[in-house]
Length: 630
Ligand code: COA
Ligand code: AMP
Image (cartoon, rainbow, N blue to C red; front, side, top):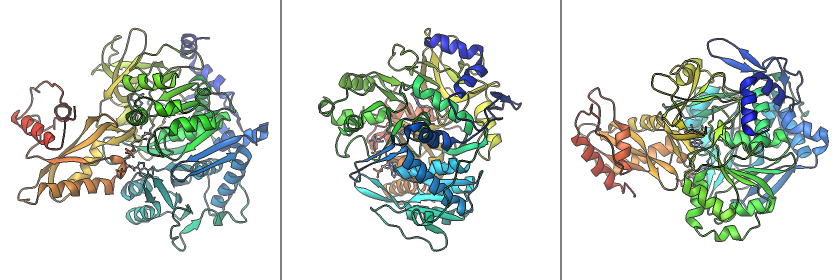
């Protein structure tokens, strides 16, 4: 069957399609019904089933004779270490950790925050929660204490599992003081913290609250897998919205298992036993789905890579890992290849390694620019497939169904809708637009299994953010079009979310931080184009009356403030003081025009602008910080 037949087959009988896919999962109680319509545009999948994620990702492979197969390869150029963990070892380690968590009172439904770098123990912590039916929430290591505190208050975890430190090139990231700071700032206090002591830095343990990862497992009874209802939340993953309060995307257990398992063969074209590598971080959705869960659910070997595309130690790292571990399918963000290309434009490092085992390269997380795809294709001789998805969906909305039938690549398009997704381009009034016309990208409800059924603690926000604008549809927040051949094109976000090095960030969140500076009366943050990271945030600061301190000093304080409150991952380094911000007569800041000015692009003078002269002031201010870069 080709893609068209599979897609049409799904469309004709969506429930039958997913029931068939569900057969690949080991159920404690198999689903009798696929879709549950809860009314008011709320849907759930496989809610009548009982199942355990950890059993499917770990134990069943041991039972089926894969115990000696390597489950996880940790390749860490930043610590000069490599290590492999077999499925049987993984099962024993996870059962022991889960047993220790249970002995301290963690049960099904309890939340556990995980704050760890790219080490196998991060996956073990996720799987131990899944084993108990506890709901994990992983927080990316590049976020500051304040962001962690916000998540602690929202998720109200019984426990936090953290490492003593992370290792970034040239510096140790002191996780423990960040964790202590976050707990101090948060209103909610976890009952206990489990600290994995790394040899790069041994952290101080707080008497009565912190326990040592190894020590607290001593003598405990290993835990078995607890079956949970199909609609039980597997995890919460916070992602940026339009404000500083992140959205807690909820992932339902059964749909997650079924859908992720389906993607491994049909999209990534790997079979059980083969090595799959997603070079991302467990703190992002790519890490949840394709470093941890999907490869393990299918019985693949997954690579946990603790390093960067360049500088650890050089631009050949990706190729070395692919050769050394015989990676069949490789997934990363376009920005990573832009970094490699900048250091190794002629592909000298590529030629040093044998990539003959590699079948294909997959890109997602941000727009894949044609130059980067072409360069990667040319240097490696491998097909490069862009695919488009979001934290909310957890897997591909539009991609190339390589395991079904590789479709011709059109540079700049992530290819076609995957089964499960009826993608429509809508006009402002919600009517579907014809092929080739630009509009809001929406998905006809119901969304497929595994996608978010709600936001944690925020059912109203879920409705407002995703369901309210276009009744009967899920609003993706992206704008684009579908062409005559049915290919999807993603053009821009329709909200204040920007994408920096494949990381999704909220300009609204940054504005909230800047506005808290005592000298800042008003501010705006926009995303400007950057050749390496895709976008970078740029801040415009209007000072309060009477402030006569040097502007450079205030700018430095503001840059430090964002780093301190949101974290280094915000990459907020560009800011400038201006007298006024361009606004419409009704007072709305003209951010779109500011982006065009900063990027040196033509723009149409908005008819509603209050005072056009301000635009020249903005252009002059941008020049003072070295933009546009051309
Ligand atoms: N813990 C602590 N700090 C972190 C971190 C982590 N896990 N990850 C990143 N940071 C820090 C970086 O050290 C950097 O700090 P600095 O300002 O002191 O230099 C800052 O956050 C910005 O990081 P980043 O935007 O990643 O830039 P970089 O200069 O370190 O690296 C790339 C640039 C392109 C090499 C890098 O962004 C990359 O590999 N991107 C891949 C994208 C990716 O995996 N995206 C995930 C979605 S698929
Ligand atoms: P995240 O939730 O962090 O995965 O970010 C999702 C957002 O990143 C999407 O809504 C898009 O704006 C953008 N994005 C992800 N993948 C792609 C892609 N292949 N092409 C264009 N934009 C993408």
